[in-house]
Image 1 (cartoon, rainbow, N blue to C red):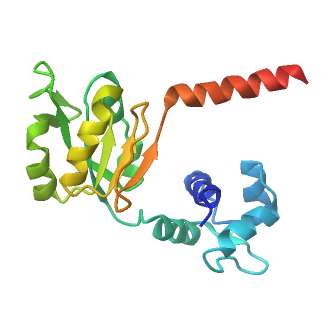
Image 2: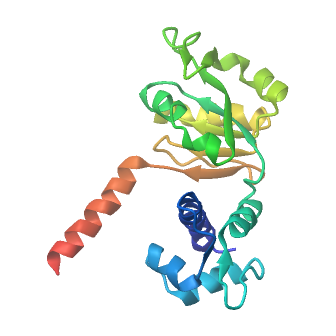
Length: 206
């Protein structure tokens, strides 16, 4: 499945959730596409990759489509997750309420800094990294958010793999080459800003 299609599913989900909050029951592919800067053809083509969800003369039923997208993305259940690295970035991420609402429950946090281990952030006590394998096994943690310095990321990622973690969201500015059995998504904030700067420069040249 093309990565772009999967990425758009998340965008559709956010828009549909906002529509439901505003008491919208149905929406057409044209309106949904307009909200995201897409054509109605693109919207229908994306959903057709997974099945038939629309109704003639009605469009899409918002609540029903939310359920289908969650099922496709695998977020129709709660994913236990761990935060590894509880410096400034890790603490900010622990405070992000959007994880829980989208099906992700951060149930453990780890660090190695003496002034951080044992601290409590957003109701979660930070354990030492040494306890990670045991905690992952005990709580059935499948996903990890990696917010450690670049020079520690590869070693810590190796510990995560050996502990049985299946997916890593990597905020460290380094590429992780992990076994194919482990999925990795990288989030390089500086790189995203570079892409934004490029887009602004190009617009200025027109």
